[in-house]
Length: 347
Image (cartoon, rainbow, N blue to C red; front, side):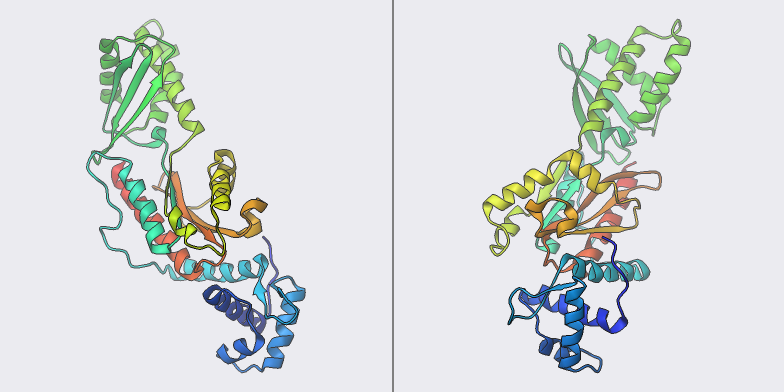
């Protein structure tokens, strides 16, 4: 949402209105703002400014005799100010070293604990979209036959975490063939990821077709199948749904179900997250900016995580528009940076 720049005094009044509304959840009067202001301003001046802000669609008056509440446009002005301050100051929240746990050998535990951390610190829903297996560097890879046409990819990261995926193969393999392919990849591609291995084999195997085993050609095909499937979906870890049910002024069970049906539409979520282009930036989407009238009373605060080479996944918080942005924006930024460091140590 593109919004014009307000005059300094107008923006200060709008900021006070937003912060008061976020705290109390009810329309804010001009008298209340005049009393809170740390600069010289009369109730009459505040009323005039509020009227101008209402004409500019920054505020809304629910009833004739009521005070004003911020619109999505008004919230956007407030949030943009917070984002600028966070970018300049680099202010992060205080998290202990134990807040993001990795249980030895359990790759998914890091994303479960991260989504739980986001939920607990924000009192809203925390979510993490996990990296695709194709993007993770591996120390050790093994293919294991688990069915007539099913192969288990077992990948161990440099940190010792185990990631596995079962793929249906169009080709038949013996376990001996899979063991030879595993040895070849482990000897020739240490520290690489499956996407690199696939691209290399697709490019190089046809050049030496008379010299390579037929197994390698079929393994290339198996990698294509695995990574095509990997491109289609990522795991979504969510914690804190009960916290939204505790906010009856916004969420009933029917609306919560609608929220998650919309949230789990992967194509839509991918479009939403494609706007976040930097590992170092937090993105906030407010109400109508989510482009779905069914969840127009929600806000989404999110960021990417990854390493110096690439974005690996996304994380964030979703809740009502009255979330405490001043607390949640640095929280999401801090958790994204911390998870990026954890992921980097896993590569």
